[in-house]
Length: 210
Image (cartoon, rainbow, N blue to C red; front, side, top):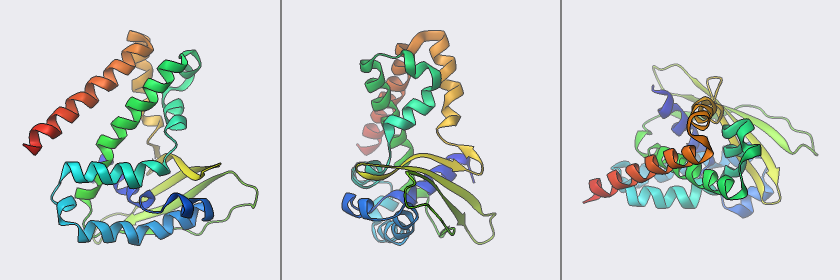
């Protein structure tokens, strides 16, 4: 299974619960309770399985993205260069990084088949504000895929700031590419690169929908 598919399959686990539920539930419970709901949505919605991009994007915006801390994810991906970025550049980077991940996660609803997802036993101190929730994705005849969620508790509940697939951090995997682009073309160059890719992808989606 391609690394991208492993990442986006992992996103299945953080999709459905409302903000009110997110505030009340521990991080492992948040993820565990999501599994059946998300898989149920995918199995029942033939338009999503068929690749209806408009419907998929709307669902991702409503159900997936509220459970991610894109500000922290972008800061981690940009690394040391984040300190030298202006507030306007930080906002633009976060927006474009978010849009890039939207492009990735719209594919999650078309690759699910018969995988099962198990949340591993979890312990957390009463005052802990960060946690790692370990899960595995399995499919008959295939090797299991470990997926770890790095989560942090804020005023609006627990949010994911990184996903590690088979020991590889999703956020950190972008750091080298981002650093190279910044070194060559500056922070504005990275913003333009991400913006161009997002625009190109959006145009392709529109063309495919015609």
